[in-house]
Length: 190
Image (cartoon, rainbow, N blue to C red; front, side):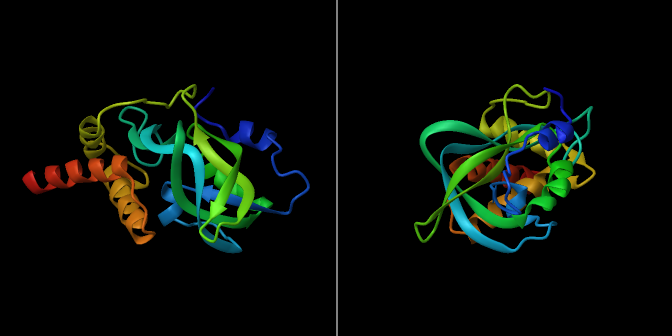
């Protein structure tokens, strides 16, 4: 799969006849909400874990020095918390552009904090996309993040903003918080 997924996402008709769709955000969509939405609610999805395994050649890095951003990996019995946004289907024109660096839209079932459920869409960068960087230790990921910067700013800001947003939502994510600890230690010693 190509790095630029705009056309592929626009050819994936996952809306049906719906004018409004729930979107699940688990990374920058939690703290950088630069799209219109009708409603936002904390939510979670089962069977997925957040990991800094996707490369960012456009927002948090460059083609020569890609940053690392989150995607989801399948993990039995895992729960990934985030925010769900009810959006008009037309908003995906903007979101497809934002998430073009290897992310595809998939259908997902989400659970809200009150126990109710809804079907919606999610962007996931799968291992077969050209920007996928794959697994590394939290220390190695932190070192990589500290060296990357792109059009949207320092890669470390992405990580720190995500960690802060997860805490504000009352969510625990060991992977993110361990990388954060390494980055803060590097900043303190640098």
